[in-house]
Length: 197
Ligand SMILES: [Fe+2]
Image 1 (cartoon, rainbow, N blue to C red):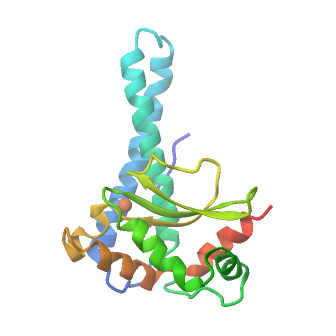
Image 2 (image 1 turned 180 degrees about the horizontal axis):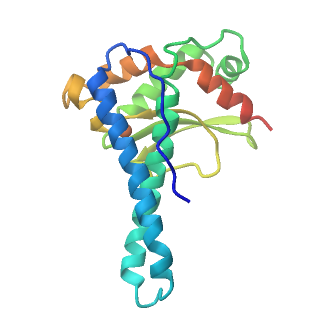
Image 3 (image 1 turned 90 degrees about the vertical axis):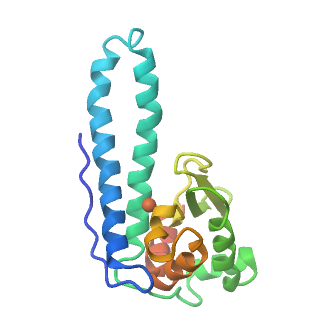
């Protein structure tokens, strides 16, 4: 089946321009389109997978890249809907952060430092229901370095396309600050609640 780009109701963001958001949403729609187009080709290739081995391997590799780009951007934009909402003090997510990181105030600088790592990618906070702990990580581009099967609580896009227009090539830190200024923590809290087992 084909996927359709989701629509997001985004408020005016602080420090992230409407033009940047519009271009970013267009890029997201491109991932959806490419994933669909590649998926449509695969059944034909699979009819003679030996003969089509090279084309098949290229498509298979690229398709997961497109899929991850699609899903991660959905997580990303969802977090910006309804505008900034603070983390609920004393709530389950806040309490879990405190248990693991001593203070809630350590979490944003930690994710910022991960986001400042070199190269395009995503800074992310996962929750491992089995270990009952957070795993913070960096996915190079968007298909490498994942903690597979773990639910993603927070996804921060740190590709250049996320900040180049507003802040230039050296403006990643400012963009990350803007992201946290606009973050709707209640979305992360919902994800954390549904990740409990
Ligand atoms: Fe992006």
